[in-house]
Picture (spheres, rainbow, N blue to C red):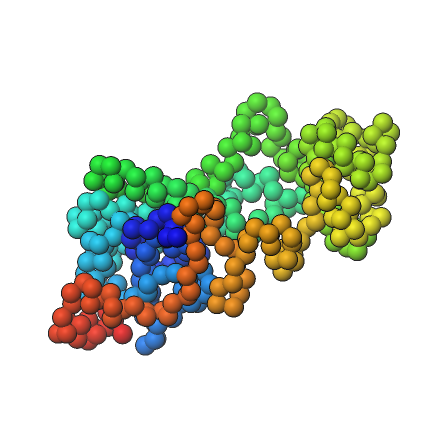
Length: 378
């Protein structure tokens, strides 16, 4: 079955990280995504475009800086429903493919912009990465051990959660609006604001006095003994999260501890003693022994798996959570649909659709020659 976004056409401008991730997501869900790939050193190349995350797109090799390059992009935009880009503010405008030019050609267009700091503000023109974006949200301050530095959660939170996934939501909402009204618009997705939005529950707790603005001293940040990881006898780890009393009772049952004499996690004054008791218990068996023991129990306990190990976990296997893309295991399309389930398309050649796309746009031989001579196409 075709994916739920069949019939939606998206232009993806060259970028790294969260923009290609968003292009992959849209393609997995059935959108036709056309990606502009840079021309570099006489050949077409971009490691991310050629990777498994570059799957499912039609690729056109185009240098937007050369004469005629921007015009090709604008002609493509006339046929598209949406555009996604991740340039610093002002770059798309200097290249001649900014929102004003794009919406003048296609008033129904949804123009999605993803940056770390947003399109305006004191930091907007400056460089940054996930760790710095997350730093000014207040979230990074709360991640890590009580007696150690803040720990960056790789680049999952700001780049992909606060950036790509938030822009995906905005893009689809704006497409609904455009189809209902004929009116396109520009979306300014700042990773800082998206990441902050993900922290809404924590701020709710803080506002109600149920969260301390410190690391490692709260219910969900590793401070509580019933929501943290414990080392096992083989040097591996189990994740423990029995927040509710019934799950806590099941945990103690599995550990062979007496609930009447074990320090409780529901009194912060007993947290250190409770943590010590659980740590000693978990060091008595291996990770996989604990996983087997707790499998039939509703105790909110799971083994902490490596990336490789997660591929073989029975739950992930049963759901088909991972698929093979160009010889490598990758997460499959999400979420799962009962009727219009998306599917993974292969990784195409970088620039492989250049001739076909230019032909679809009606470029004549003499116009193609001019584009080649200017260096806009290879």
